[in-house]
Image (cartoon, rainbow over all chains, first blue to last red; front, side, top):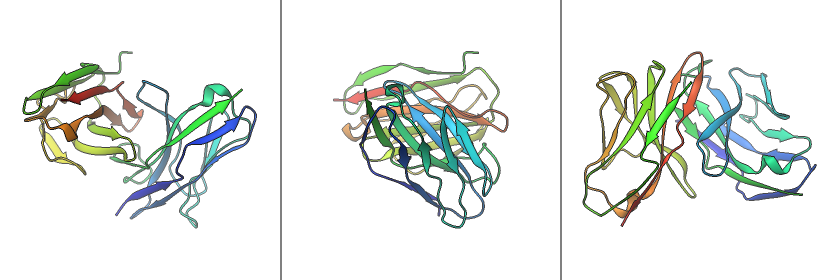
Length: 115
Length: 111
């Protein structure tokens, strides 16, 4: 079946520190992979995505590379800001190269950045 | 660009009561979804719909009912609310161009 495992939080960093949030997945077929961000009191927003192996998704300084050999999609940012404080969710879609199908989510990682 | 609207934003109800959470999209996205978000569980899929009049169970469908008579609406009904259904509920829609879009959520408390 399909599942996503992401590192447990919370993660607490100082401003300008390097961020990595690990995400690994199990899937049948060739899923699309996503990172979503949830700010307090809001719904989820798409942060970045990758639809095939070796693709790199990037947005707002965040990056993640679709690694089929290690079934991973780790989220990284070189220099975090206080405004990056949020909950981050790794997810996969069970439809190849598509953003249509149902999503399978990890449990979320709370990130807090201190000034 | 109204997107997805969920209502109510907050709801308190008593055990055993029926309650309906509304979800409306202003596009014509084919897929719509209901998730619940609980601490330690992330988001779990309750029901989803690929088109009007087509619905399917997700991971945690027990105690919930959905319908989709119109493409733009996807209400979720708790037939007899229980305390274990206290949660934050998110509706989402998707299509091949825009991907997933989430509503702002409904915080439901069952007392």
